[in-house]
Image (cartoon, rainbow, N blue to C red; front, side, top):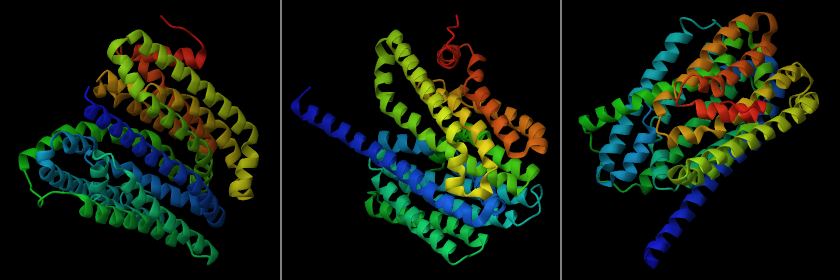
Length: 432
């Protein structure tokens, strides 16, 4: 390798490290500031109103996957590998995202005004869903990712997040009703998209937008399977909040949402650790499968043990944590949190082996585990929510996470090796 090539490689590694640092920094900032602001908002609104707000957010998130038509990764790939077709790629992405946004909003309106419970949550869902139309133009995020300069997207999102966090605190101080917090949520989306679009238009170097029907249709055909996979994942992750509100009511939804804040905040840890080790795993996969699986086993075992320690600590401190942050009105969330936190074992185990799917190039099976988890979650919620409310929902989620992140890997011969790895980490058993 020449000195020039070596210098370029070093600069590339530095750019990647900085990019990861910006993205990780954003997640940490949003988690910490978000937990503080969310706790204050929940204290002010109370369990029922907080449940309505959380339900509305979960409902819109469930359909947000339709908006991108599964093309985000494809757009980033083509912007990098086909620089001469950047105008066509960006134009096709905008067209497909616009169609996807219209379709997702149409699905949301159809369901909330025909199937969903007839209460004020319909209006809240409708208001928040408008943000999907604006996010269709967030092509700038994908552009900056392709250029390894995600800091601009982070700046746009964090700026909007901080501004509207302050707005929410002012709404609390002046005792505004729930609907203003819904408008604040929409405002955060719109402001972030406007800043991101401005930065994108200032940075991008293309001579106009060029529409190519063949290119657009090809991108759509490739993206649709990923879209259905994303829908399955969101259904698996958010259907519990939606069903709990529809079956158990807004109070139970509020209690459950409060517990989720303390349970899901820990998921950042395995995501960051796995991301940092993914390049090493990719290299090992290329020349030594034995070392690859040994490293994957060590990673999975370490993360599972860490999740057990976290679960024990949170179980012991659950009551104090809930009361300190959310207040005595949310004390019922204690039992929900004690159950839900143990699902982190399966979440950590699932994230630990996630690079394996990419390295083996078997994305075609990625849709089945979350779909299996979603079906299990729906069936269990129908059985448990009417009698046990938020606590029953937590039990359903715990079992569904185990089914999706762990047990589902035993269904396919090709994924059985990672099932053995997870089983050894979770139960200490070595399967043949």
